[in-house]
Length: 134
Image (cartoon, rainbow, N blue to C red):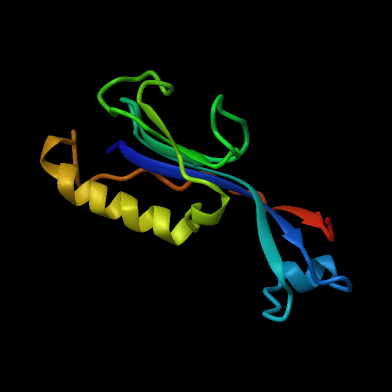
């Protein structure tokens, strides 16, 4: 049975702890300080179109910084259809906040979705870490 709903994200992290080793970070050492640097959180209905995409990986005309969200109509397979809203560096959401927003969206739109109880397999994720950048 095919899975239909999926989300994926991409984050680049800065390691701010000066003496952190790669194994410290990858082993989950809780004393290591990291900060999100570049992100893109994208959710869509597989076989249809995008629901939303939060990112800061390209600028938008008229926006004071690059942090924005694309809100789309999933019934249309064109990823750029929708409203682009500036959110700003001070208000960009955590991945957990985006997941909560998508859960709320799912419950509000469940009856309109094709096969609403199916989900996509997670996409493979490779950590991207930028070391001690300022």
